[in-house]
Image (cartoon, rainbow, N blue to C red; front, side, top):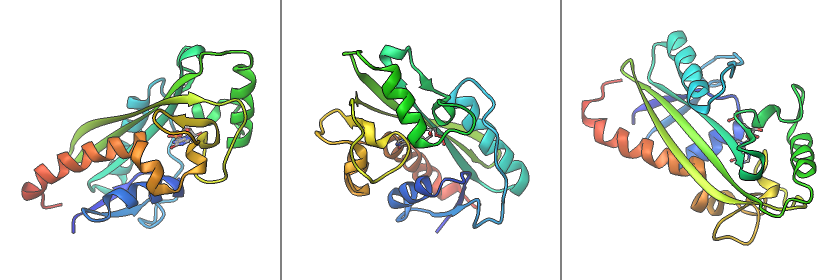
Amino acid sequence: MQTLIFATNNPHKVEEVRSVLKEHFTITSLKEAGIEKEIPEPYDSLEENAREKSTVIHALTGKNCFSEDTGLEVDALHGAPGVKSARYAGEDADSHKNIQKLLLDMQGITGREARFRTVISLILHQKEYLFEGICMGKIITVAKGEKGFGYDPVFVPDGAEKTFAEMDLQEKNKYSHRKKAIEKLIHFLTRHHGKDKN
Ligand code: IMP
C-alpha cells in the first residue's frame, strides 16, 4: 500500500483521516515519522496555511505528504473564527475557552448558520494539489456531548439533530467537512495510483 505522511500533530485528525483512508493508503503521522516540529500557521487563509504545512514537511522529508487546515466560519460573525479558529480566545486558548468566547459573541443572535471548511494540500511528486470539504450547520446555544474535539459540542450539522460531539466517528463522517475533503483526495490519488512510485 502507498504511504503518505499526514502533516499534523493532532491525534483526533489522524484518527479521523485514517478511518476514511485506511483501505487505500498507509497514513504516517508526524510523530510516527519522527518529526517533532510545531508547524506555524501564519497566513490569513486556510489554503495558505495548509500549503505551508505540507511544504515544510515535504522540504524536511522529500516524501509525498498532505496537510489540512480547518476553520469554523459563522455567518453572523462575518466568517469568524475562520482561519483563527484554534486561537479564537487568545494564543493560549483551548477548545473550552474558544467555545465560551464563541457562545458569548453569539449571545442574542438568532441567525446561527455556520460551516466547517477543510482545505487539504497534497504534495505528490513535487506538485501541489488542493481539495476542499464543507459541512453546513448551526451553532447551538449550550455545548452538548463529550466526543470529538474543538467546536464539536456546539455544532449541529444540517440534516442532524445532535452535535458532532454527540456522534461517534462513523456518524460524524456522514456529514464531516474533513471526510468530504478526504474523499476528493482519495478520488484524485486513486486516479494517479498507477503512475505513483512514491
Ligand atoms: P486547525 O485546522 O488545527 O488549525 O484547527 C482549527 C480549529 O478548529 C481548532 O480549534 C480545532 O479544534 C477546530 N477544529 C478543526 N476541525 C474540527 C472539527 O472537525 N470539529 C470541531 N472543531 C474542529
